[in-house]
Length: 491
Image 1: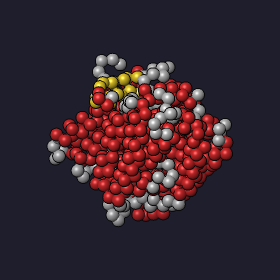
Image 2: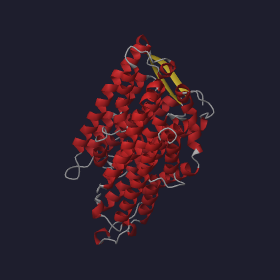
Image 3: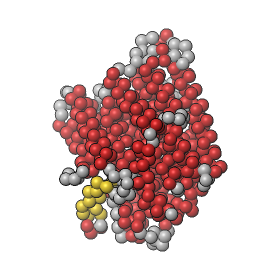
């Protein structure tokens, strides 16, 4: 693909679309929704074009767009993708389009809602494509305001939720992490004289002006908050519980992955020796995430909160794969980010449908829904089985690679982490049984199944889960190409 800087078009098309939405009449909400759907669909098609044009046999950065930005400080506008970032770019574009479809019933301040969704998509895409640390940091901050407003304005109102509290908690945690990242960014600049992440990866950072270990942990903290890593996870259940459905899909699907991606792109890539030294600590944190998240999930009575805590557990597998610092484990960690995005995005979309039709998310108040909404119940079962790692589904492929890659390095930690699958099976199957497979309740006699439009995102995500589960090489071959430069530094 030559000619236009396609990667820049991909990143900034959503924010350009947000400006277009601002010009549309507020009295025509359907037109606003249709415009948002077309814009995100174009972005998805462009991401698909980049995927098909990507050379998986090359370890080089591809589709590069680079230009001077602030020459005195050596800050450049530098976008590019490799096998590490491209799967996450495609995932972001896919979930961005599906989030618009999931939001079709939004009727409050429609223009602002969809404009914020589009700005949020630009911020996330920018994080996955920026190769200048200042540009990376700016895109990292761009997603804060849209996410805050989407939760605070369209989230669950009292007494069901505490949307203002949850939005502010998300903002405070993320800004705190960003402050640490900024300090680490400046320390790197004073040590290397550049903000270029590719040049930094080639530099020897073992004898920096600021100790390399300190820089590693300053930057790692920001990514640990976003992933999230225990004990910096407490913002996530609140944010998920009170966010509107589409925002939960984006939050679980791609925002959490910004943390795992940053750990690989910056912490492990720039500081391989520090990563080796502290790998046992990272593995321990990962196991705590897996088991703590799963045990707390067992106690949840709210469907959304249950899936939120399950995300804490499943992100532990990402950190476990990273801690192994080997090709198989790192491949599994990146694949886990991709598969978790589709599986958990599907689960949150389903919870949103259940709530819209029953007006409750409390599991003890549900029951027998399979009799009233068989399509939703069937897809919920598929998503739940994918979450617990059933073979032939994408969740199994990613977790299997994590365990195979980690066991030779951290045998006991791997066994403890694998026990989380048993807990996952427990809370998923128990939730399905209580919500869908008990006797039908009279108060749900009026409840209907998913409409045709509501089925589209569900079918797309189920297809993605099955395709990756049956043919994981479609993604892992691309991922391995992106991991080779990191592995060469680790080697």
